[in-house]
Image 1 (tube, rainbow, N blue to C red):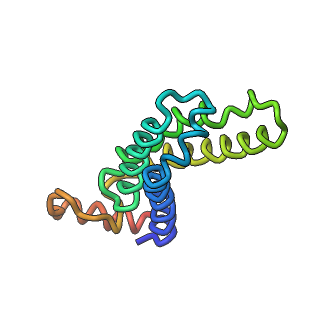
Image 2 (cartoon, helix red, strand yellow):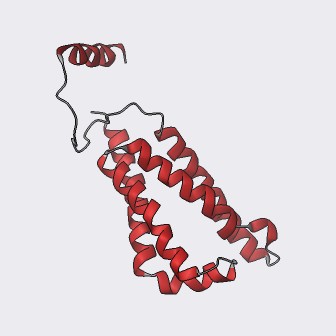
Length: 149
């Protein structure tokens, strides 16, 4: 098993899972900021935005259908980042800097999620859900890939 990939996956998935839970627990506190950014029905939007965070974070963390989980994260970041972190519209220099930092962070996370969508499944050290038992040919292929790497 490649420990750096597993540790990175746990940190990345855990980040989104934590933030999904945070969106649910603190939706009332987060709603005014969303409303100030022009989000209609802000509290409902904050609550609904937790769904792709929870799906994506859990999926990446457990390695269960990680391409779907990464796609949920990509969709969330692509939709939310330009609306919530529109630094190009901020007149206050401190707000501009804060929004720009968060926007760029989200773009980096989006890039990581896109990269994870290209990792061959099943991932090592994943929760085995509905996987057929490997055949001899699959085992031989796996061993040859490890030797070649």
